[in-house]
Length: 381
Image 1 (tube, rainbow, N blue to C red):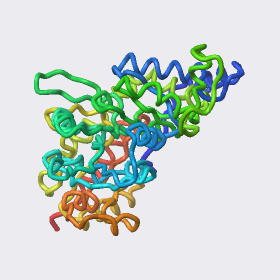
Image 2 (cartoon, rainbow, N blue to C red):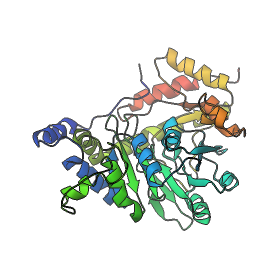
Image 3 (cartoon, rainbow, N blue to C red):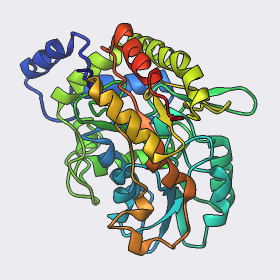
Image 4 (cartoon, helix red, strand yellow):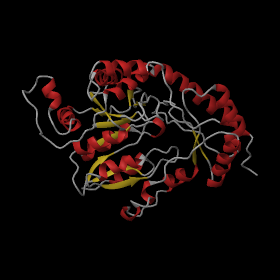
């Protein structure tokens, strides 16, 4: 049986967890939390990072930081995970869904300006499969209309946007704020876990307070205030240092993890290219302004029946494949609140996109087996 995902252990996780336990400091914001945050800031260029218990937590912090009020509108793609929307709905926002691109499940940037109203507060681009949205265009629109940008970079660690002058910059460094995930399905993991990246200096101090339950506790421990108290709203967003210790072991090995994932992704792409062309199946598309972090390998079929046929054939051969999001605008919860616009591309990806197994410990021979089983399926019958 080849599972869809299998968490990878680098070998140092238990060593660092034991060290964290032996230190006597296993609550949040300990040694390993600080190590991870400093490395993310140094390696990727974030102004400030705060580890969180999940990417959902990071998004919820972002929604508080931008000062959302009931009735404010937030633009985001419909083809995304429910947490992207929930974080802003919890603050009373109205979600305005954008359709996906024709060539990629990410939001169609050309539609954004038509969705902006006087009530619009923020744009939330989602870097689907770790592939960048057009951040140059999005930031230009945001600046024009004085909007916040919160990047949902859950899948986008170690992925980049290439601007019109050819400069490469890490995803999560463009928006005022960005959220990352370290869930067990991501490139580097801590079981559950996430991170808020802060790129605007005006948010740094308040983000720490919100992170620490609405208190200035972090400033107190740095000796900046002589006592701490309740100074703002907040919650317990910071993770245990045990989680951070696990993440540190992963972060140390990010280059090796990425190298292996690139090799597997390219093996899939090259092995299925001819079959896909002959069967009307689309391979993953990476726009010229984006890089690929090999988070996910997927195919897009012409019809839902074709996807079902492939799922069944793979399952019969002990291979687990899964589809992805159901468009949020058509969900039971939000359909009554949607403005009725058809989001054709989003619904198309909901019906036809299929994800293949992708994890570090997947072997070349297993990928070859998956490719051969897939190529044995004729969708033109």
